[in-house]
Amino acid sequence: MQPMDRRLMREINQNMLLNLIRAYAPISRTELKKLSGLSLGTIVGITAALIEQQLVREVGVAESTGGRKAGLLEIAPGGGYVIGIDLREQLIAGTVLNLHGIVVYEDTWPAPLRNNATQAIGLIAAGVEQFIERSRVAREKVIGLGCGISGPVNVQEGVSVDSWILDWHNVELGKPLAEALDMPVFVDNAVNCLASYEKLYGHGRRFHDFLLVTLGRGLGMAVVIRDDLFRGAQGLGAEFGHIPFEVDGRLCECGNRGCLEAYIADHGIVTTYHELCADPVVVKAGEANIADINELYRRAKEGGRCAARAFELTGERLGTGLATLVNLFNPQCIILNGGEEHRIDLLLEPMHAALEKRIFSQLGRDLSMIVEQETTPINWARGAGCLVLRDFFSSPVNA
Ligand SMILES: [Zn+2]
Image (tube, rainbow, N blue to C red; front, side, top):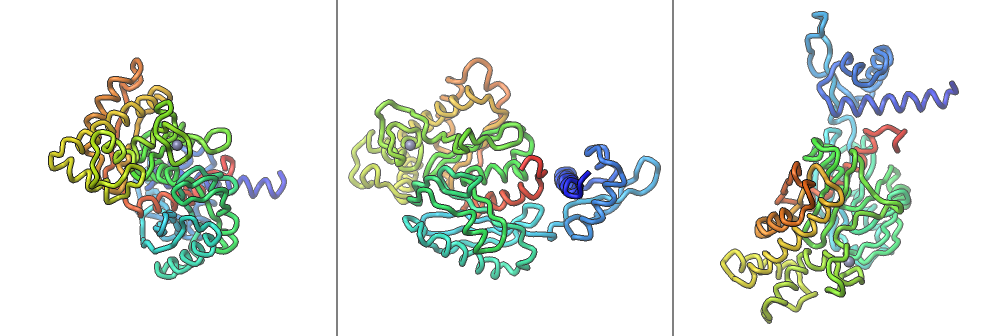
């Protein structure tokens, strides 16, 4: 065996053990042997090195089969830190996560990113440096930066292909940010970031195949198949929001007509309201902002029939869209993420009714539906940090 191969093999074994310790902690070396198939000698050697590097620690002892005490291992949370940022139109949300995926510091700061791709790298890099300083985490313990952004992303190249929300097109982020910050940088679609969190630490831990659907400013989706994100041939796949929903329907932000997002996203709900009843108080359809959707929600809650009907119709449409997903993917679980303004409660009943009506055959029989009502910019940033953790705990063979 060449020295290079040996090093790679050791790295693969080390990452496998790190991942097993993450998933099964607290765990003994004997159990690691059973799960990994490695020899006890190899495990003892690698875990000693990991303890030395402060990435793994001993936590108590368990009775082993021979009556001897066996040391139990877990990932040392403070052995390293990752930074996750979520890029918004006018602000950046940032988190510092420890190796347990727990947020140890969080903050948001203003950054005029929309329509400002030329200054993006400078703005982001300076913001992240100051953020790390404020967090008081030792710079040398930072393993890498994960960066979440709306719209399709070329993950290999770290390029934002199209972000309609930021009005960015073919903006290179990965390489220039890695150079500016001198650390590994991972860029992915924001919903894929959230799904990475769900898979590592959230509801997704229990499922091999699940879908994450996000509501709010847009309509996003991430697809996890056999524990891995599905991306499609060009890596840009799973654009649930832009499946054609109505022939020659509403104009969508992407330039097409009739996309589902134009009906389900916040501005879509406002447009529906306008179609149902002309109301000059709420601004013109297509120019809706967060104030308008909040106003509509308030009216619906207070018994306004027209506003309530707009949410009901949106729920039906969402349920129809979800039925399409169930019929295509037959997932174990759909995690529905209700956006940041807690409006999903008005959609749920009509959504479930439409979903039940339209699911094909028995595809929905064992479907788990998990609704997360509360999301904050910090949740999205935490997801971005999980891009780095996912890489850290994955085998280089799969990378
Ligand atoms: Zn579209």
